[in-house]
Image (cartoon, rainbow, N blue to C red; front, side):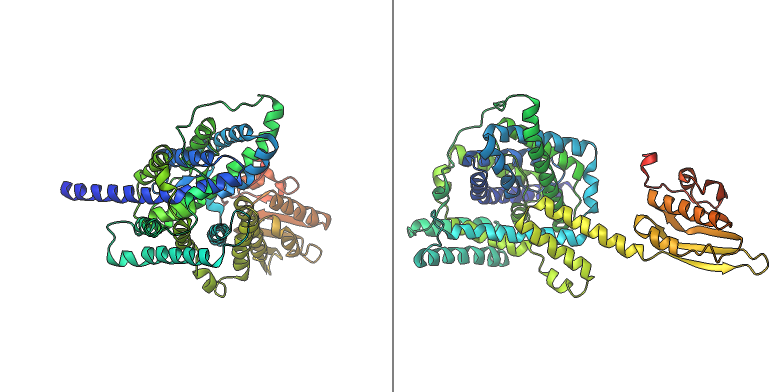
Length: 507
């Protein structure tokens, strides 16, 4: 038994180490690009990438998931940096981290379960399109024009070579991650033949020193808090949503289960530390996480190694990393796009309800044109509305009259909640009913305050008609919340159900 364990540990460590190196190489241009988007120095993005990556890999709830500086956060940061300066950004990142820590400590990560599968599919497909569109910027010159034919042919050739190696090499051997081999091979060919193509160094220099601890140079006043708080809340939400949805995706890919609350705390700690060390903050990265998983990275070592290599690039090996062709890294990201996009979505369109397809497509489109947090929140709201509308139509009542006593009984079926209280009222005809009427809730459940009000309103209708109403099989909490109908409830200790009503009176 121990010999088997010893055999597997080196293999896993090797895979984590090599996949970490692969991820680090792919992280460089993204971190630089996102820093430029946020209007900060490239090192601010690189510092965030290695610090967030290393801290979350050690403390996080999802081994194998990669975190770093992301575009979803960068597009929010740019307005704060332009209006108030980079020190306000660092303060906002610190506050963002504290909010995320609180989120995890209060165990709110469980609410990620409220994200329906169509929203998750839309999130994945939207991010795949965002990653793809982000690569198109590399096909343009610094002036914003498309590159010419010769440069385009060289770039296309390197991209094709990179994608071919990544796709076909695993069929021959899996000893070394195919992505790492593709990056090394593409870079070697470009350097050997002195190909005229854009490199990492053309984007910005990545050479630097260790980050220094510094408290953001801002006035500690309420006015400052009013400035940074809205940004911190938005950044915290985006970071948590992207991180927890990426956690779910990695769970599916590895068939294991992560810990959302632990990951939320780790993301918060990472961002708090990063803010004090001059980083732009970050969150989980779908593309890099998929590269890591596909390259064999499964443990915490992979994320830690990625961060460590990234730091070594900044301190020691910048001149070599800056020679890597952008085309090679674009090829890697194109493979990520292909692997990320859920191609089965096209087949599902005709097989799932139209509403679900519409939600998934809407989330993907909103992700591309706005940001992730808005897309997911809108998707969840749309799904909730669809769910409420569909279940609102599922309430009905079976009617029966006892010929001897003349008592009429309504047996209510289906959940009673805010969306179907109108339909509930239409089930009853007080003016046409006999003197004694029973309403049986054995096959129904009273869900919220609106349902309680509907029962009270029904009691009032029968009272005005001079009829006697009897309510049976209601929970104790329902009886407590009722006003008009409280005295009409028939109590049966053995049969009355026990459940809670979503009502703020008892919160």
